[in-house]
Structures are given as structure tokens and as C-alpha cells.
Image (cartoon, rainbow over all chains, first blue to last red):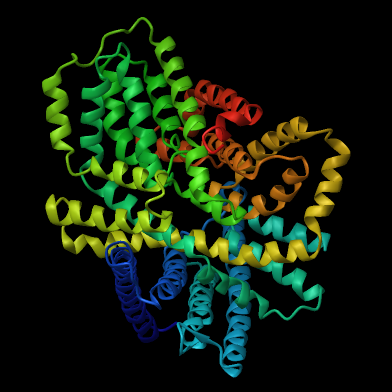
Length: 165
Length: 418
């Protein structure tokens, strides 16, 4: 990679991280507020927003995927990792490269097949929260998996080039 | 099929993320059965169809805020004022405080970091043996797992489709049994060191109570609300998150606003990692049920196991081994759907099964090679894993005794839910 493309990547990386953090903060704050409002309405005024509970659940899904994207960025996905610690230098890098490439392929497949799921849902005109098209909410699945895939491709490339992050 | 399994096992041992392993095995299974792989998206979207899941990000975030604030210090001072007059009281203070704190922070290892740093110097200063103190703190890091509103309890309820309210109640006595037996052991080990750390003083108790006046309503509102049935679990989680933010950020101002996004992000990283595994395992579980794996498993187990008693014994041994290599969240998500139908064949109550499962997995935090508490203690107190492991061994044995009592005395878990 030449210097220009690396600096471009680094900038995308910074922006990506910032955007990810902002979205997580916004979603979690919204979740806390919406869930609390529902309780207040239910217990004090015996009413509630009809779409409130459905939206809360969708926000949890978005938080889950965005959180997973952040976890991949920070290499904090849950793993067992019994063997690679006992490997030395070269072999350890081979192990890292293999597992990262494997993860990239799996998440790539997940992204592709959930994209097909979203397309189907759009085709059938599935609705959520009364009259909102479901595919808009479901879009986070292929998007999230794709971002995780990108993360592992990047890691695999870096290992192949001998640069462990 | 066996080859695929072997390759996936090697990849898992080499450190591939577990969610990728689970997703790959589910996709391989669906592909062989000619089922369209867009089912992976459909199953993962199931995360948005479980109302109870909202409790997990909310409680996790509240736990992260609490451990970033000064609440751990206040909790320690309060329990010292309340229990410090007991001979050998500090060890008991440590056990009780950690259990309460772990229940609220989700057993993610944060207890050792937040409270261990306070207790370790206090214990050694009070004349406790160094090895004993290390073992005590490392063990306390996951104590309280059976008390509401701990994350593993909620997750078990989600996966087993069991009543979380009942699980919260069922965990009380088994959780207390662990605290009491560990206290008895600590007391016995330190019977020569009977100096109490504080005199019983009403003034001190009042001062400590006043200091914690904002945190005190929390267990009362949350636990009281849930146990009395006034709040649903997810509602209690929302109230907790909102209240904790209000107190630690607005009232006490121990956490500046600019740090809140960072804490939110950090807590959602944990939630994302757990939900990723949960999401893909919704698919893999469905495939396994489709392929009849629970029935096959039951047939195999049944040829070796004579009845509920020996089944529970085999389960505990299996979970001890599993707990040594798998964290509690992945174990719940992966193993519960398989074990539950088998246990039902032996007439084991799913609530009781959950308590046995979690109590045994609690030991997994203390078993090498991957026991989380061992690593955190080793890192925090700068000792080798082997040294920490030796220090925790006697506590491990006490907890193992607890696990067997919990397994073979179902009434202990079930008496309160009738």
C-alpha cells in the first residue's frame, strides 16, 4: 500500500470509529429514554406508545450489531484461543491469518445471505411498527456483517504483510 | 460432516471468534439439508423479537457506570460498618460486597478490578495471609451470579424460555449457600485472627448509610420491584439505567458527561459480542433441532446414565470441563438448548436445571486454562496464573461442595417458587 492510500484508510478509520461511537451513544440513550417513557406512560397514565415496544426491540438489534462491529474493531469478540498462544512467531501469524480469513469468509456469507433476506422481505412488502417497511430496519444485518467482514479482511491483509495491529 | 466438525474445532482452538464457528456450522448444516441460507438472516433477526433482551444492554450499561463511579468504595465502607465488628469480619465483608456488586454488574470480571483493588490491601493489612486474600478476591469476582439481576440468569431465561422472575427467586437460597459456606471456610481459616476491623458503632453505620443514600434505593427498587411483580425485568433494567445515570452523572457528578459516550461504547462492545453469539446460535439451535440432535443426544446419554441422579452428576462433570474452556455466555447459548430437552426426559425442573447450570459454570471462572477470574487477578495483582490458581483451589473445593448440594437438593432452589 502506498502512503496516500494508507492515509486515506487511516482517515476512514478515524471517521468510522467516531461515527460508530456516535451512533451507539445515540441509540443507547434513545433506548433508555424510550423504555423509561413507556414505563411512565403505562404505570402513571395507563397508556403507552403503540409502536414503542416494537421500536425498543429493533433498537436492541441495531445496538447488538453496532456493538459487534465495535467489538470486531477492538478484537474483543468472544473466543476460546487455547492453541495460538502456545505457538511461536511465524506459526502464530499463520494461525492468526487463517482464523481471520475464515472469519472474513463466514461474515461475508452472512452479509450476502442476510442481504437476500432483506430483498425478499422488500419484495413481499413486510411491514413493522404498523406501516413502516421492515427492510429498512433489517438493513442493519447485511450492513453490520459487511463491516465486520471488512474488519477481518483488513486484519488478515495486515498479517499477510507482517503488520500486526 | 465429521471432517467439517474437526476443522471448525481446530479453528476455534486457534482463536477464531466463536460466533464465526457457530455460524459456519449452522450454514454447513442448512446447506447439506438444502435449506436456503437466507434463513441465517431470518434467524438472526429473531433477536428483535424477544422483548426480554432489552434488559441485557440496559443492565450492562448500568453496571459499567456503577463501576466507573465511586460506588464500589461507598459499598465497601457501608458493609464494613455493618459487618466489620464480626470476628474475621473483613473476609465476610468482602464476600457479601462482591456478591452484591457482581449481581448488578453482570459477572464480566469487573468486580475484581473495581473491588479487589480496595480489598486486597485491606485484607493483608488486617493480617490475612496473602495467598488466602488472593484466593478470596479471585473467587468473589464471580460470586453473586445467582442473584438478580445478573446477566447469566437473564440469558439462561431467554435461551431456555423459562420465567426469569422465577429464576431470580430460585437463585436466592443457592446463592446464599455459596456466600455462607465460603464465609464459614474463611472464618475457620482465620480463627486465630479474630481481630475485628471496626467496633460496632451506630454512628459509623449511620454515617455510612448517609454516604450511600443515593445508591441504597437501587437494590430495593430493582429487587423489590421484580420480586413483588410490580416491574417486569426489562422495565427494572430501564429504571436502573436511568436512575444510575441520574445519580452518578447529575447528582454526584463522579462521571463527567464527556466520558459517557466512552462508557456507552465500552458496554455495548460486551453486549455486541454476547448478542453476536446469541444471534447465530438461534440459527444453529434451530438446525440441531431440525436434525434431531437432542433426541440422538438423549439416546446416547440414556445408554450410559440410569436416572436423574446420575444424569445430574454427568452434567456437572461435563459443565466443569466445558467451563474450563468456554465462557459462561457462550456456554449458556450453545449448551442449554441441547441439555434442556434431555434433562426434561429425566424430569428435572428447568428452573432447577438453570441454577445447577449457572452454579457449575461459576466454577468455570476459576478453572484453568481460560478461567476469566484467574486472568484478571493475575493481571491486576501481577502474579502468575499458577500462583493465583493455587490460591483459589480451596475456595474452588468449597464451591464444588455447594454445587453438589444445589444439584441434589432441588427444594433449595424451588421452595420459594412453590
